[in-house]
Amino acid sequence: MTSRSRHLAQYQDFKKGAELDANPPQVRVEAIFLAVFHLIDACAALQNIHINKHQRVRYELERNPAVFGERTEEIWLIFQDIEARLRPKFVYGKNWRQEDFDSVFEKASRIERVCQEVLG
Image (tube, rainbow, N blue to C red):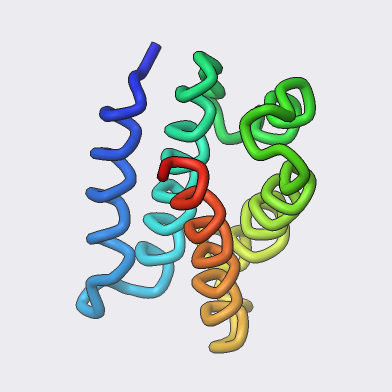
């Protein structure tokens, strides 16, 4: 099981890749997706919950609402939108537009704000 500190280190590393303008948009989107996954998992680790796989975010958060309290649904819905609707446009195809790119980062920012509140 990965600790909170390890998830935060992973978050920071992936976030650096997401912010690097020299990286192609596809790499930046994948990096921010992985960054916010680790940030969510760091929040879960505070409750001794370990998500371990991005496909389990919704399941684990619904099962453990203490992680985000009343914001549980908001977090998994935003994450799921990045994962299932936006990320595939970049990772599996070339049919994305600038507004899709901007949306990924706006949604990631919303997750980050909530997670920073949880992490204190």
